[in-house]
Image 1 (cartoon, helix red, strand yellow):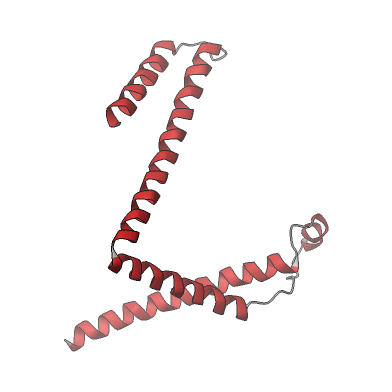
Image 2 (cartoon, helix red, strand yellow):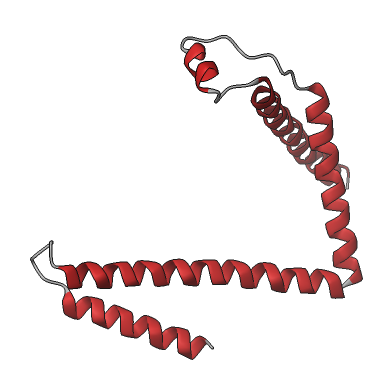
Length: 142
């Protein structure tokens, strides 16, 4: 499969290089540039899909990885839940807020989720700082 992908890539790159010229409005050059870009997008999304599928398969077959993944999901859910409980749904006041309210881009629900994201960031940052401090103290005590 990799050889097929490599062959297609080499063909597209050679075709692009052979069609490059000074005329920027040449339609054949645009076609090859677009073909290379689409091919790059396809390879990018295929690699993401392969990584997700393989990791999911590994997680399902390995009990320890499944347990670790579930613990991480529960932890993240707890952080988001706590942040959601502490967030406020009032719309902030700042210069030009009326424009966002009138267009419907800023609602109380949007404000609540923005607050949730900020508070979750603060919680995770605090936990990271506490982890760094704990690591330093525990290494000194050992």
